[in-house]
Image 1 (cartoon, rainbow, N blue to C red):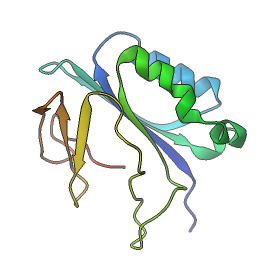
Image 2: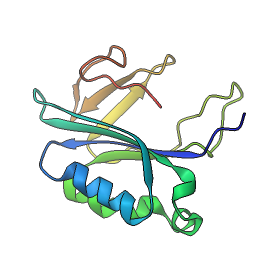
Image 3: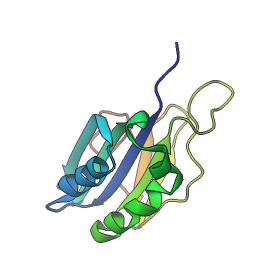
Image 4: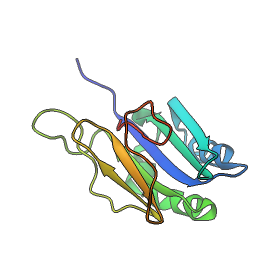
Length: 142
């Protein structure tokens, strides 16, 4: 069975009004069909976290080739985002699991992935957590 190509946009930034609207509008303007969306804010840290999975076939290949990531940069800058756009069509590891793209982190946040798919976030030098995908500041890799 062949899996459909997807793009996964993950991001974090200071919490505020208009983030979901701006990201959703950006994707809609490019024909992006969001097939999965998750977001929440952490009131303790004042951080907002978002993950959108977009059907790859819904975005014009020309748009992808011309740099969807470059087009998103002004929105990311406006909200102070740390973000990543992963493409399921990019390289795969030998075991068939999607490898993380070799994209440097953007912004003041760093993520460390564990072999079991958990991530610990460090924001401006402060570790937010470890734990599993159901923890308050722990996010599972797509």
